[in-house]
Image (cartoon, rainbow, N blue to C red; front, side, top):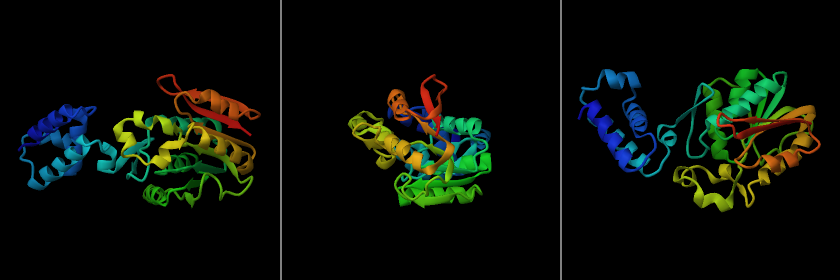
Length: 273
């Protein structure tokens, strides 16, 4: 079994299982199995695949065909140019969430203390600390997710302060200049309509907000008034179709801004207390 043959067979298996991007996925899984990069795969396409590599590769293909996301198989996900470790305890960071970082860099470069609510893997908190050089705090309700975030922060040399609590319950009043969050915003009624990779593998506490999908938004907006210093900013990722309702929640806030993603869909909302 050569490297090239292994790639072709993996691609065919993934195609038959109707997995998106079968060729790319086969490459990523084979790179993970061999511990090599893409250039190595193609430079050594006629080399025989070591038995141990084939065993690992076969297991990874089987997991992916069963719906397990590639990022949970490899344990890695890139976010804002940095590699974060991910496990099934945390939501896989999405490219869309990078718009929250861009909004923060544009609106709050002078923030002295930043809070990431519901940090998950720590992607937002770690990135903002490294980009802004600010004192950064992050809350997370799941101890297992918090452990992943702590490990990511340590590996990327970002001294973020992590607090296990619900939303902002443990954060002192008038102590924060900037709050960011990618909150859970999927209504429970939409559970069955999600992709199986999301529905069956990603943590429900990071996906589902409640019956309407706005329950966590509402709590964040209310508690942000207590936690933010005067003139502090709140920046949140928006779920599809959530703009009007979230904008209503922010009535009375100043400098309201909405930023679209690359598809033109409203993705980030920002406001100043």
